Amino acid sequence: MTDSAAIALAIVLAVLASFAYAFGIAWQHRSVDASSDGSETVGLKKFLALLTNPQWLLGLAGIGVSAVGHLIAVSLAPVTVVQPIGILAVVWAVLISRRVYGTPIPRRTWLFVALTVGGLTAFTVLSSMHANTATVIDPSRILPVAGTMYVLAGILCLVGWRGPHWIRCMAWAAAAACLYGQATGLIKVGLTSLQRGEGITSPWIWGTVLALIVPYALGAWIVQQAYATGAAEIAVGTMTTIDPICAVIFGMLALGEGEGVGPLTLLGMAAFGLIAAVGVALLSRYHPDTLARQEKRALAAETV
Image 1 (cartoon, rainbow, N blue to C red):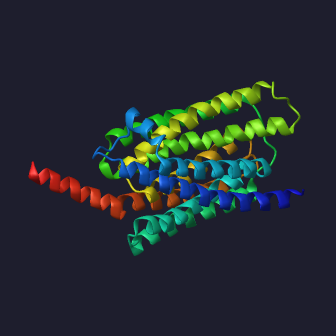
Image 2 (cartoon, helix red, strand yellow; image 1 turned 90 degrees about the vertical axis):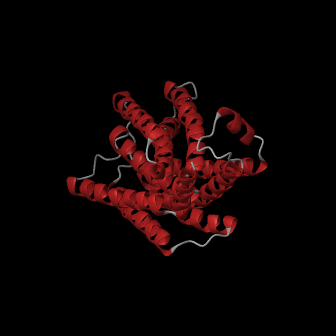
Image 3 (spheres, helix red, strand yellow; image 1 turned 60 degrees about the vertical axis):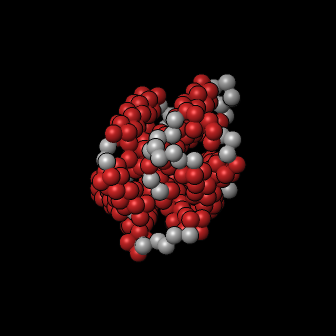
């Protein structure tokens, strides 16, 4: 298969995976929402109860299908090409949530979605035009970048826990996205090692497997906190924006995929990435679910 054919197939798989991801998120969010006791956190007891909830498990199956499609796509094309396509999950999430909850979607919500999708689409075009398809595996580059993303995820968790109410869902989801973004880069490392003929006993293969257990297990718990503090669209929008940006940064800095990128291209990517992030922030701030939660808290405060 030629490089162009492989990239085309990877893009198709990534689009299908984005729908499966949005489907899974919507059903898991509905399960968390239905089991809510008024708290904006999901403790261990509630999390374990979700593991036996059929709707939540259906959502998990959707996310699993998405993960498989995404894994195949990443094996066929650079991370900088595949990962940003996940932003389409925002559109799917809005449509699915409208179908599931039967609530109308305000015009400005679509405007914020368009801003996010447009910004990340431009970001993707720039990154894919200049991506280096030769993956460099160098521990001195990989470990510092991965460690930095863990620190950033920790800071975002603190914001999700103690920050302003309107930003909590976005902060929790962004924390999970940081972990998932670098995890995608680590998957690329493992797949590249296999493609280069290294056996399953290679330290890179086992190291990759072990390094994936923590971010996915921790990320799964963090995402539930996002569901408990905001709408599915906010969680999906944040994760599918921050995740690819983190993955692209990881690919460029840790895997050598950015070696052919010039300063003007980097500036353009930064600008479009910022536009996408602003779109997510506006979606989080003015989403009907956020406004309804604010009104509920205000009424509760008046009755005290």
